[in-house]
Length: 328
Image 1: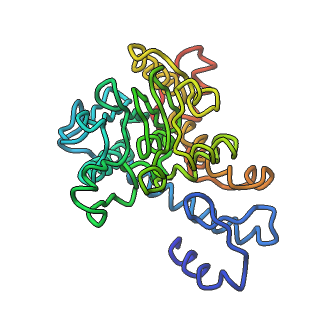
Image 2: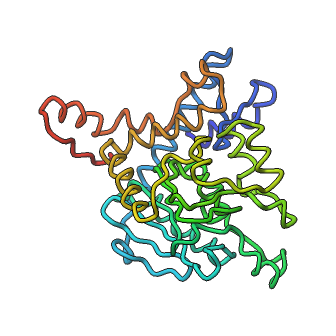
């Protein structure tokens, strides 16, 4: 049914309606357009398809590496209850990433998305000097640009991962430069140690911030400020990043992970499907005028509306107890 609707729509799109795209690449038409019937059918089809795939994904049984530390060479992956902690583990290179690391992280974040028992992710770097210095330029110099590859999900397996609706927090424990900064920008919340420095220095080494930096930074801070950093490669301190609204909180290094875990637990106090619905609607709605964004259909919102948690929340409130969220 869904495939037939999509195929028919694609064949007739140019002659029947004006296509618009949300950040996921899914065609969406505003509910108030003259083609609202077409929009309703397509949005419902996409939403139903997303729910079916998400439900199937969430029922996958994970075998082998379910709990505790998981063995990788260039990162560590640990699950603590509902929280997954991903640590970039190349401190001898300031946690700069090369192709083998990208593909490991692609696998790690895929597992994070699929695992129904994990609801919040944390990304940080090993040591106290760097979150990540970005692209491993020594590797590039040694192997040539033609050997530099990353997965479809982009730098660190996260920069192009635009449809992960589970929340991710960046714990920036030092330098976050180039791709390192871009990975942090791809997260939903950034907590930084007070000695951290952030920036996009790619232009100074003959590159550009193509892992999302040139697109995300101007969307987050005033345009001229963003362009100043993009075009000069200047770094900003953690406090400057906080002043511009890039960083949520700046703390001493010793308090970094306790603070990040507190943020994660604050998120876990909410219903997981509500959190994911809120993230999806906030991010996808940004590309539309307010009246259109308010009337769009969002697959995660539909999942939330028909979930057991929407019954549990009001019931727990009425019974004056903590809710028992199930993410279903």
